Length: 65
Image (tube, rainbow, N blue to C red; front, side, top):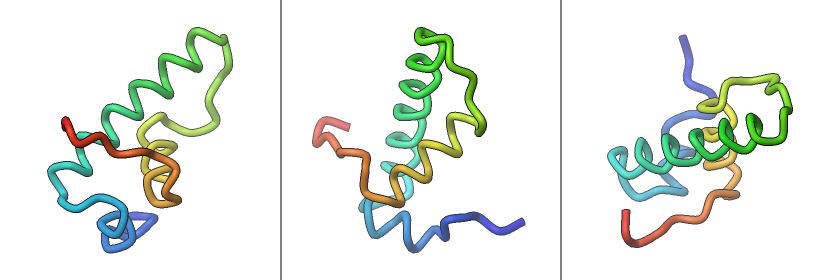
């Protein structure tokens, strides 16, 4: 199974794998919560959506993480 997008593309957006896991998990929880509150069914899993957003540079990193 290939990770899409590739890990090297994700690490261009986030400086370490540890931080990447934290950023993706936090964003996935936000996506799931927002979809549930709005009553919108998701086509993809929240983690998949979060990974894509990180790869596209749509997720802002906090220095506190």
